[in-house]
Length: 278
Image (cartoon, rainbow, N blue to C red; front, side, top):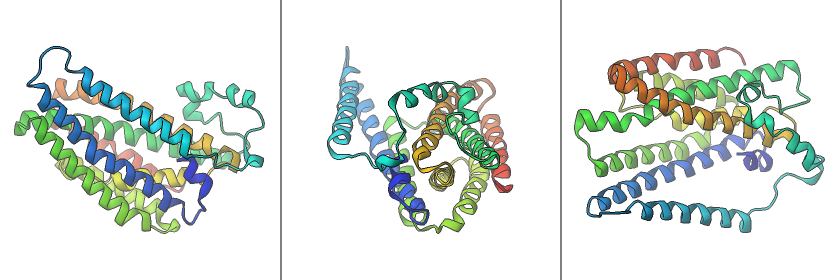
């Protein structure tokens, strides 16, 4: 995301974010199917069968790392980089401490109004991903208990979800003009609220995440674009870590109906907050 912010202009940044989102969607197409294949294969095995999918995941991660090291160069011009590594390390705490994350303490030299907008957008992003990732995580529980889906059927379900997201991001989101980024994010959030009531239609995240990340990239000076995007990715990771835990507890404690209805109405806060002038 930070690389996209470095190499794009305000006019083309939304398109760049959409292409990154489309890449995630393509992974969402292939990944669950591979997992489903391993799950079906595991039924025929005994012993330490789980080593094979673990090694496969390790191989993919190492391949990705090697590709990045060999094929990517630093995209931020030298004159816009941080002055010293020591100074960068001193801000590491701001990326680990959750209180500092929400306060965006690592971002400096911003006007108070811009910092307020950035913090507000960060809270919207976190709450949205916290609820969405939690409900998304419990979808496999729901389809198994209500529709008796097996592992392969769930893999095909996520395959179709990935196809929808890739088509949405590649065909629509990347063509959104800069002045419609915020309104599209709001529109996507509004779609998600009734979608989680209906469950099966909840795929508006294909519009929300790229648009919010594009809005976030507008803040901060050139040498701090990576810091801003890094904080948003950290907030997203925190939300995706906590959301499934709380949603799973709710699912098995109060049932799917209460969990999904509560999540749907909880998503009203991000959309109403984003609707206000940032």
